[in-house]
Length: 407
Image (cartoon, rainbow, N blue to C red; front, side, top):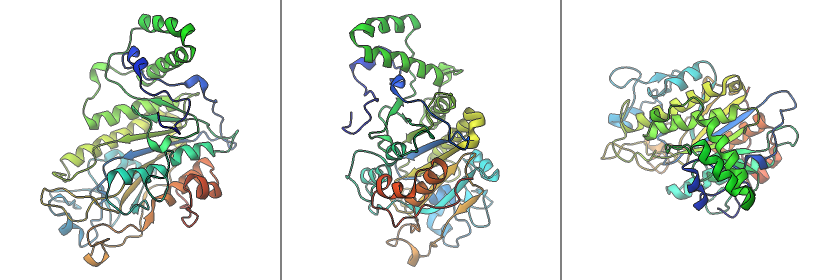
C-alpha cells in the first residue's frame, strides 16, 4: 500500500486469496453521506484513459481544411466511406460513440477540445502522474487531486467517501481522505456457507479482516446484482461496460459512495489505429457502452451526475508509417451526465496548419485541463476556488475554473 493511501483501503494480500476473487472494502469504517444543503445528491466520476487518446480521431475537426491530409487513411469525414456523427458545423464524433452522441443531443454531454495538462513531454508514466496528481510536474506526491478535493468538501453538506475502482486504487483517488475499493472479477464467488465459515474463523482472531470480509462480500453482491457470470465479457472493451455497470449500482445505493475514480488501459494506438472500425473504434465503443451503463444504472441520480473523461496527453496530428499515431500533446476531454451543461464543443481552436502545430507535430493545447476540473469541482461539489488553487491543484492560481460546465 502506498504511504499516503487511505487507512481504510485494504491492499491485495494473502488474505485476499481466501475470498476466491471477492473484493475488499472497509465500508463500515466510512462516514455516511449527507445530502447537499440545496437538496441535490451529486455524483462525480473521473475516468482516466491510460495510453493517450487520439483526440483528433475521437472528435474530428472535419471543418479544418488540414485535418484530412494529416490523419490520412484514418481520418473521419462528414459522409462517404468514413462517416462520423455531426456535432456542429466544424466537429464530428467517432461513429463508435452513439450513446455519447445522444447525450450530446440531449445536452447532457460536452466536449473540450485542444486540451492538455501542464505536462509537455511524451512519457506515459510522467504524463499520467501529472494528470492524476494534479501537480504541474511529475514525481511530486503520492496523492491525487480527487482525493484532496474529497477531503476539502464542505462538511455536513457533501459525501465524505470515494470509490477507487481496480486492483489498485488509481493515483487520482489516493491520499488521506477515506476511500473504499472495488474491482470487478470473473472468478466464481465463494459460496455463502464458505464465506460464513471464513467470517467465523476471523471474527475473533482478526476482527478488522472479518469486518472487511463481510462488507466486501456485500459490496460484490450489490455490484453483481442481476448479472449472469457466464455472460460477463472478457475483452477490454466489454470489461469497461462491466466495470461501469458495477460502479453505477454501488453509486446508486442510498449508503453508497458518491465519488468514484476508474482507469481504463490500452489507448496507446501506435499502429493500426483504424478509422470508423478497428482498434480505436473497439475501445471507444467500450467507453460509450460504459457511459450508457452509468446512465441506466444511476437511474434518477443521473440528473445529479458529472462524469469527466481525461487522458495523459494526445497523439500526433499526422499518422505514422504503421497507420497509427505517436505520442502528442493536445487532445479532448469529455463530460457526460445529467448535471452537465452539454450540447457543445468547448474549444479555442488553434488550427492544424503546419505553423500552428505544437513542435510542428501535435495539436496545440489552448485549454488547461485543470480549468475544466476546477470548474466541475467548484460548481458541482462546492469546492472553493481558494482550496482548488492551493490544495487540490497546488500553485495553480493562474488557472481559473471554467464557468458554466454544470447546470
